[in-house]
Length: 98
Image 1: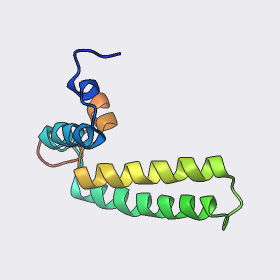
Image 2: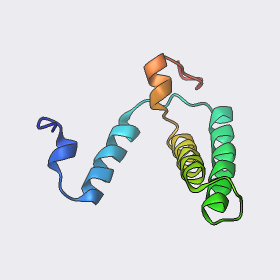
Image 3: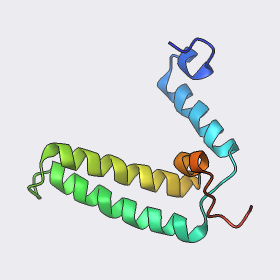
């Protein structure tokens, strides 16, 4: 599919994750402290609501629960890594290091 990309040439899932981690950690952070805290808090809240929905505690449906959980985990992950690929795409930098 992408023969020149090392990511697709690695068969082991752990090696792929390590490769992605190295790419993300090598990138300059573009998320500031307030943005980081906001993402983590809102992401954890979304993940809890999504998991509660998936567990049948909230009647929002399985698809909604899965999407909300995934979005929450993405927010937490980008907050912890302090790198947002969408911010990079649109040229947004909320960190004070510009």
